Length: 289
Length: 270
Image (tube, rainbow over all chains, first blue to last red; front, side):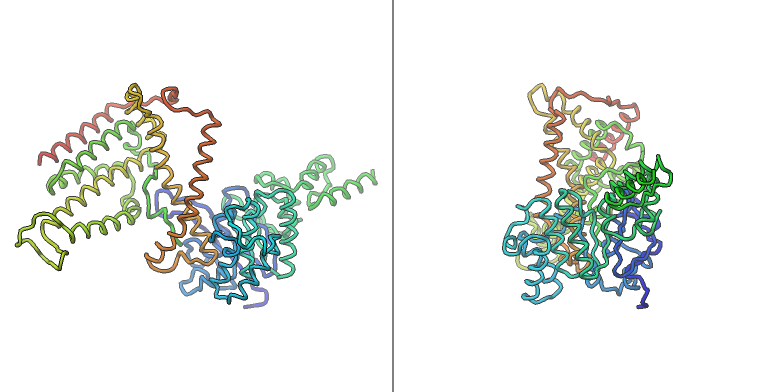
């Protein structure tokens, strides 16, 4: 592998569900991008923009045609490609955590991945303990609890723990903040930032809202009706706030405020990530006025 | 990757805008009933041979690709073959010694057994084909309205027609939803290392079995949500409900029904 080679690459990816039947529906028309090791990328777009299909393609969860999806430079749809290994290296947390919880008991579920990957009982136990503790579900307290007796937020954390326990170099999250209360969001956000740094993860977050994604990612890939319409550093994308709003993408609150100010002061920037940045920008204006 | 929706089309509706799609739902239900009755009445091969062209006509006019129907019936057909094998091997009717083709203990293959199994297969296939065609060509709204109108008079006898039809329609509607749900679960579990896309039919079937508990749980949750949604919109069945769209059968609809009935009568006489 060359040093600048992408860890994940999509080349003219197109996908139609139930292709060749009367119920065929086109989800992705033409998507190309490269993601490098250690990047923090947000894939954003309104509903029906093809986000989930793109995510599913990473781990070959669709009927892919060859020549479109490459992991570490290898075509994942090639018949010789090892899908098991691919799925042990790309961890996906789905939008509905319930769908990926396999076992009834928390500990057993988090252990599922490591066990399937052939780890010893001792190693598996360590991974389960570490993952549950990391997610704020103390191992001793939670390992024997029934998954279905937990709250929605807790189940989401169990689902994330199950993926974390796999120690995948690539972590993909589909709408990770959906259904979480403000405190849960803040905690998960901090946790993901820390995890990404400590484990040098390649982090891919999929969302229709930029509020959390802008604090989590360095780069945005914006999808609209199955094609890439913008791709670049977060601040560069936020500068085109009007276009994002047109695409029905929820903007961060600081950007919403900045857009209002922009109407009054045409040179007011919209690439603000936090309210603090908005505040200091406003204060400078007041100072000069 | 597994695409169950390709292999099970039961309960699906495919809009092609054909003549059959536009027909009055009541007439379609009546014609389907005639064909269902025919599947019981007709008891020899020539009879079914007469019905076959009618089925082809229905298929062609509906503009639903035959390949799609066949592929979507694979699981059903496999099951049918499985059942019929037993029917032949354990045939218990009167069999003269001369018509045994093969015998081993209680297992046997006889011309009588094959004949009965053949007729049975044709009956089940006819039944399956006409009901599948009805659902492929009729939206659930039309199906509900049609059934309610047909059985409406029974309400005077205090038969809860509305509720019964509702239960029936919801039951059908849940089949494709469950299939979709299973696909979603299978995909999510594949991502976690249960390779649904590897291994033979039996391995896959066993893996699908593991999805039954989560499917049941989500099914109950869905039913719960549906109940609440209906209650908040003040649903009550029975004669209080009126129709926004009145159904009207055109002369060509009646003509089609007459044609089907006549065709079946001929097939029965043969």
